[in-house]
Image (tube, rainbow, N blue to C red; front, side, top):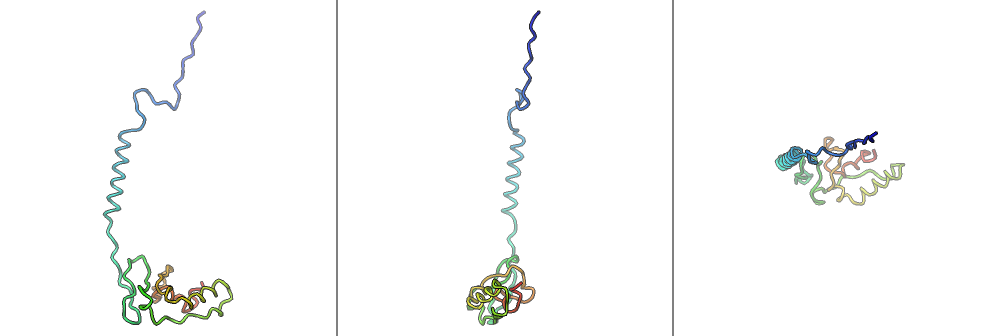
Amino acid sequence: MPRKRKQKSQRVWEQPAGRKRGSKLGLAFLGIAMISGLLYWTSRSVEQPRQMPASPAGEPVSQQPANIPPFFESEQAAKPFPPTLSPASFIDRRVSQAYQIAREIPGVLAQQPCYCYCDKFGHRALLDCFRNNHGAG
């Protein structure tokens, strides 16, 4: 009796003989998508700067894009500095330290934007947050 040969089964991960790995159509689509994305990002319009409030001396505070809150361009533009609350009026040690730092370096804080967007309450820079208990919270 002749012996039956087992037929080799094709492995699942092997491609059929007539196909190549990867697809030229897929590569073309990927290239078009990358070029389209590049064109989109380079053609986006640059945001126009918004008018910032003036300092007490009448100088403009800053001409930054709309997504950056206002701040003073220089220490001189921020003078006179607003008075800050006493650090001793806070029980929390971290809050007290923050108010102490605000008293020590008001010129630095006046040049920093406050990202809680308190400019809608009249604040002109991060230093204004320490005029009252706003900086504690």
